[in-house]
Amino acid sequence: MAITASDQPHGPRIAVLMTCHNRRETTLDCLRALAAQAEFRAEDLFLVDDGSRDGTGRAVLDLLPQADVIEGDGTLFWNGGMRLAWERANAAATNYDWYFWLNDDVELLPHALEGMLADAEQSRDERGAVICAGSTISRLPEGEVTYGGHFRPEPLRRPLRMRLAIPDGAPQKVDTISGNAVLVSAAAFERLGSLDPMFEHIYGDLDYGLRAGAAGVPCVLAGKPVGYCAANPVAGSSLDPALSRLARLRARWREAGAIHGRDWRRFVARHSRSPLTRLGHRLSPYVRILLDRPHQ
Image (cartoon, rainbow, N blue to C red; front, side, top):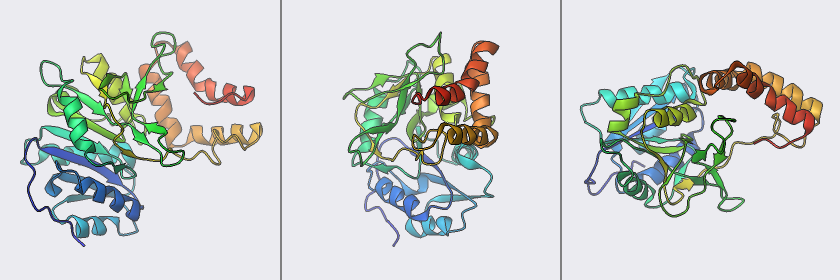
């Protein structure tokens, strides 16, 4: 059944940017929670259906007929899909005040967008630029923070070592962001542009936050968690503690040749200060496995 708004929201115009692939029910659950946000307008949703074969795009239009559903060919992945959604929103007739990145596996909490907007507004710089990330939490273990903002405890010595920020009730400055639920002001977009096409799937969000910091754009974490989102599973990966060292090394070798590995190497090359540091970051996953140390 289509969702229709009884009253058009007032206030800033927010373009919601999403991309999805073959998880229709998860996407629809996300959109139902989004539609309950008072600031949301269905015509401001720009969703890339990247070659889904499960009818996701059609189901989205059945639920929100005014949404702009953009067809992809299945090769865009997260970074490419979000770039395409952003291009469509930027080309629209509406002059948007904000762009809201939203992963389709996030279920927003009531009033989440309202809280993010309030925290972002008070954190803008003199030209109106700000990026505000929202923390997501797991259902089990209850309330564990899964994504959001990140600190770099040792930015000079270990520039890519990051620690997940925990919301403390007020907006707090962070060094970069995960792209699960993020508000980007129009002024920040004007200064930074879109996600970098150098990245295929991941790390474009972390890169965007680091570029924001270099450009003097404030990057903050909202004071309260904004939604539920489970952490990515580690079963069968090089991070799976149930596997033997040899199995984890083999998994890491496979991962290094896949899309995530390619994006990691690009991210390391951009944000490391020296060839020796870059080499260290590329070798560190193997060293941790050999020493049986947890991922950090």
